[in-house]
Length: 275
Image (cartoon, rainbow, N blue to C red; front, side, top):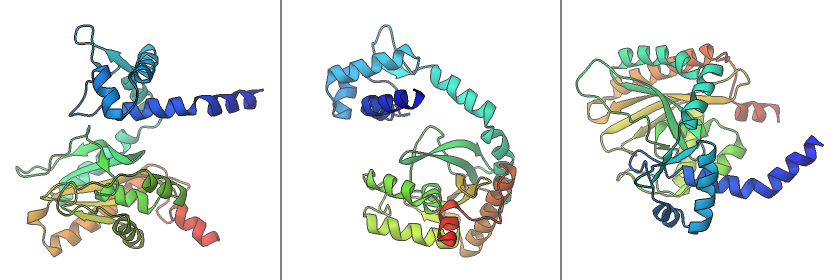
C-alpha cells in the first residue's frame, strides 16, 4: 500500500516539484525578492502556474509574501530546515576547526562546500589574519565547472551524478578564463580525478585562484569539498605547492572528522576497482 502511494506521488507530482525547486533557484543574494510577473518571466513559465506554486510554498513557509510590496522572498521554514540539518548532521561544526587551521596555515580565505544540483553551496568560511584576502560570499552559488570546489566534487562523484549534472549545465563565461565548452570541462575533471585535487585560476573571478580537495564519507563517497580561495597575483609555484599540500591535509583531516576513511577511494573509483 505504501509502495503504491509512493508511485502515485512520484508519477503525478514530480513535474510540479521540479518546477517549484526550479523557481526557488531564482532567489539569490542579488535577487532576494520577486514580483509574481517578474519571476514568471525570468523562469519562462506562465503566471498562473507560478502563482499556484508560490501559494503552495507559502503555505508551508518556504516562501513568504511581503504584505505591502507583494514581492515573494524565502520564508522562515528554510531556516528551520537548515537548523534541523545541522543539529542532526553537524557538518559545519565539524569542518570549521579544519578551516580555521587551513586559513592560518595558508594565509588565505578557506571554505567548505556541499553540492547543490548544478552548483556548490558554501557552508562554512574561515578568513586569515591579513588585510588583502579573497571575500567568499556564502550566499553565492559556485558554478561546478568554473570553480575548484565544483571540479573537485564532480571529479570524485559517481558517474550518474556527473552525467546528470553536466547535461543540465548552461556554460557561461564569468571571466576570460572560464571554460565554456563541455570538452574542456570533461578534460579538467579527468585531470582533477588523477591528481586528487583541483586548481582553478581566474575562472570565476579575475584575481582568484581556488585550490580544493574532496571530503569523503565512510562509504568512500564524496561528501563535501575543502578549498582555499587565494589571491592569484601573489601565488608563486612554491607557494601554490605549499597550499596544495595544506588543502589536501585539511581534506584528509575533515574526512576523518566526518567518520570517513582516507585510505578508501571515492565511490567512482571503488566501482572501477571492483569492475
